[in-house]
Structure formats: C-alpha cells, structure tokens
Length: 138
Image (cartoon, rainbow, N blue to C red):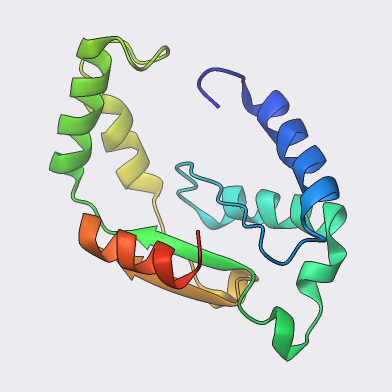
C-alpha cells in the first residue's frame, strides 16, 4: 500500500481474487495494519463482493477467513518503524514514526469472529507467526 496506494492495492487484490480463489491451494494474506473493525470490515465486504463463496457456511469453507492478530508491543513497533524510516525503506514515514504508532495504538482493537472471520489467531513473536503461517499453508 505504501508503494501503490490504497485504491491500486484493492484493485490488485480484486483481480487476484477473481483469478486465483478457484484454486484451493492459493492463499491471500492482507498484510496491513487493519487496526479496527471498521477497516477490517471494508476488506471483508470487498472479499464478500469479489468471492462470495468464501462466505458460504460449509465445513470446507470454515477456515478460510482467518484474522492473524500480531501482539507486538508499541515499543517494538516504534523501533521497527524508526529503522525502516532511517534506512529509507518506508516511502511515507517522516521522522521516527512514533506518533503514527501512538495514533494506531489509540484506535487499535483486537479482531473478533463476530466481525466475520472464521477464527482469530494471536501471535506474539516470529516463531509463533511462522507456526501459524505453516498451519495455514501460507
């Protein structure tokens, strides 16, 4: 999203969904800071429009809409953002980025199944993230 902009990213995902979701081996991971139910809801509504079969209430489809909640402390996030900013790897962050992290922390909410996910998985560190991704075949 930082390189392409939100609209272009959504269009890229829409096109990918139309082509690839017919193949059960394919996975879509939206790796963004979807910090609240409103933002996540927009993605779920888009997916509902692009791939309504994902929302079928069948056993075979029950694990397709997973939210991965990364439980990373604000301090770790600030350090990562600062490192990306200083290295020039992040095109939109000015300064050390700490105010962006602080703003996101204020509005952040843990995802829930009531939002439309089949289940929510939390991970605290790289090892847990790798385990979850392997389990989801990503």
